[in-house]
Length: 371
Image (cartoon, rainbow, N blue to C red; front, side, top):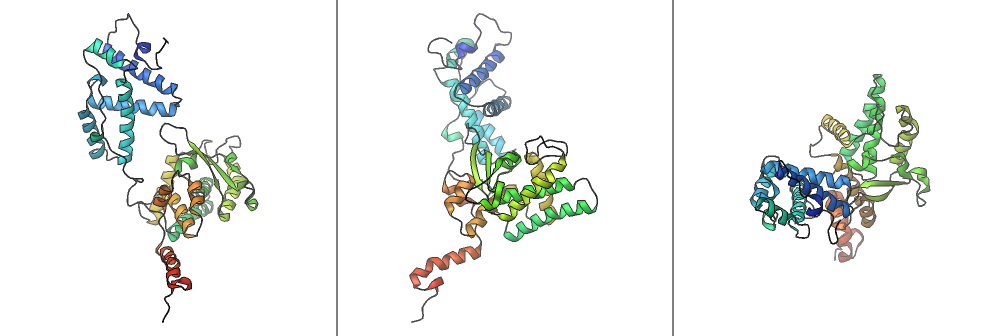
């Protein structure tokens, strides 16, 4: 690397004095190689770099043009196809546009020299293609679907009861699926009782449980260490500790770990949720089992595994748990995110209303005095 050269500079990626049979393709590959080097130099990991590169390559396939011929109009057409044909969520499209913007900014940054090399070789050069007027702005704290909601307490009880019933049915029928059904019933209890995301749940290990001095009654299941929390873009997964607050769920986990998981024959596997074939349960499998249970009960299709996490936040809020505690436990950086997750019931709102009115009326419970 020459003095003053940045990692990813064009001069470092292009082989001088060699005539390329397909110079356009060679230039594109050098660009991707340089972009990778630039990101590695910034400390980014492969699981961040690889998806970005795949996304930009898909954009190139869509345009059927080389990067030095891309224009803002290509982003417009691409975005329209993502919206109308693939019907992706605005937050997903914005993430795609962000990756594309990063690649475009890398190519047009004069310090890396790609514009000079392209103009010298092809008579044209890359230009910025992502602007405020052709990309989606992040205007709201929450961009999920408006119909998304938590389980009511009655729906949750039905769902968990149904999961337990599948174990009993498999046992009575002497089917092989009894262990898997027991595992899944416990898994859904953990998703709800610790307010987890689906991917966080699938990546739990047995060793992630630990004691909590503030709750010695829960033994080795007093604290859950979540190692694969939702990452900020370009950053590693965020870790957090989630205290156990529901004794019935702790009992369910302890029973599963002590009496059911060993029967899978995977003693050496670190995963909490193991399969009959000795692997780790993946998020898609969690989703498939959830959908099967939800549809069997005739529950609304708007309910998803993530609804269990929403339910944890909502039910703890209704039970009067401190908002800051909930925010830290679910791993939200700001309270506004926790507020969006909260869908308190009418009874809770009425109780809170009476408490708020009580001081004004000077009576307990907010009952108006008769004068």
